[in-house]
Amino acid sequence: MKERLEELTVRAVGQIKAAETAAELNDIRVAVLGKKGELTAILKGMKDVPPEEKPEMGRIVNEAREKIESALKAAETEVKRRDLEARLKNEVIDVTLPAKQNKKGHRHPNRIALEEVEKIFIGMGYEVVHGPEVEYDYYNFEALNIPADHPAKDEQDTFYINDKIVLRTQTSPVQVRVMEKGKIPIRMIAPGRVFRADEVDATHSPCFHQIEGMVIDEGITFADLKGTLEVFAKKLFGENVALKFRPHHFPFTEPSAEVDVTCFKCGGKGCRMCKGEGWIEILGCGMIHPKVLERCNVDTSRYSGFAFGIGLERIALLKYEIDDMRLLYENDVRFLGQF
Image (cartoon, rainbow, N blue to C red; front, side, top):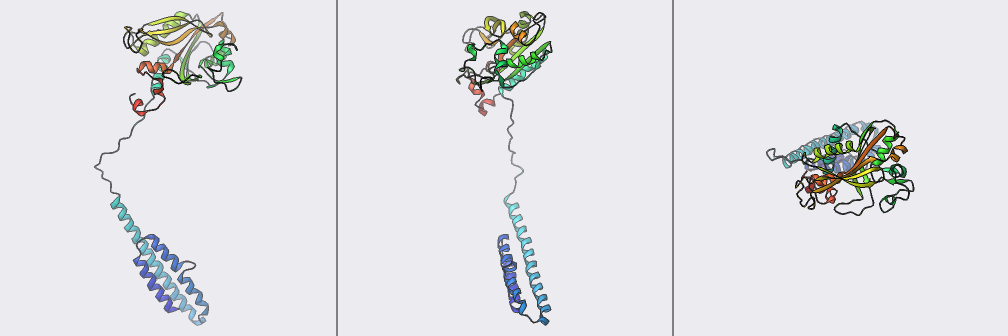
């Protein structure tokens, strides 16, 4: 047994010194010191050693184990050192090379236009209010003086969840919710995403954004509406723009109007942007219909108000001279990077 231990020790130490990787050293450890290793197999013969010789054999066995384990530890340290040197040599960083430039994100054209519109109205004392995109039919239609048989309620224009719930077609329901609270005077705008069953083309999308505005107070007239929109248009498009109000019809306002501004590209002379007309339509507006106020428990003998609605994408298209609405949603970084 002594000779076998000495032979095993010499052979194992030699194999350890010749090993070059951590995997090879681990294989040697298992083959020699493992549960089924050579040293364990030799130790099973201890039962045949005479009792008086067992202390001496135990000492020899322990010395053999210590030599092998010590050689393994030294070899593992050397392998780790060599691996580290190789990594440091292969992973050299040239600090003189130029650093990679990180591309910074920035605001979307819609967000830029929205923040500019919000800034203008907040400067005039308006509050920005938000509401749910999935809305009750009552708030989206009935409370806005749109009866059940109105064409606007046809399924070709509206996405219905069920008979009583729709995806809002405008942000006007937010105005109704604010009126119901009964805190007057009211000066607010309601920006948000709206949904209509439109085909996708250069000027239409089933999902787009609107900014609805509303003022309710004592003595509010159409002149107040006109003055407000003039201030808004001049701040957004420049001091030289003029406004033109054309009679129109909206169920929730009376009287109603559509508003055009002189083309800020050509100054009203006619160009590609205004299609040679010199005017560009930007929004719809009007005095809030008495039935809408009454339905929201607003005293029409004391209070009156006006409302208006602006398409956010239309503002972005006009302001940045974009000719296709789809460009705003394709997220092409070459396009977005221009803003």
